[in-house]
Image (tube, rainbow, N blue to C red):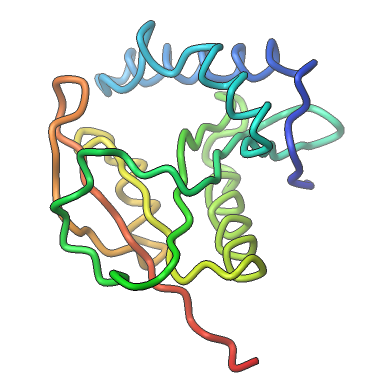
Length: 169
């Protein structure tokens, strides 16, 4: 598996992956995402900005992750530890239905941590739907700290942060 930037010609593959994941979440009672979010336009903007990455197996996109510095306005009053640093923000982590449960989301998050370390970031921030136990379990297992909650699209969300360790160089 390799992870690299998504190209504009791959938007249809991204949308098929995301729509399949949304359908599975909704069937399992997780009311995350839908017609209103995330849209093709959002992903096209991510691709144009060079901030959408894909995990690929045999050339096929099996997972995606957005990486940038854009923090949600609802995050302002959270209990962040990294106040003076430079946080990398993770958005829209999603794994294709047929590849879920194989550690791909964990590999995408490790990629984000490596990317952050190589690019001078001091922490990683993200949010996750409070009603998505799979996402919450992933971020908890990777050592992300819950820093507060906010109401997003009619549902409670947790903010997470992980301070990156200085490797001494």
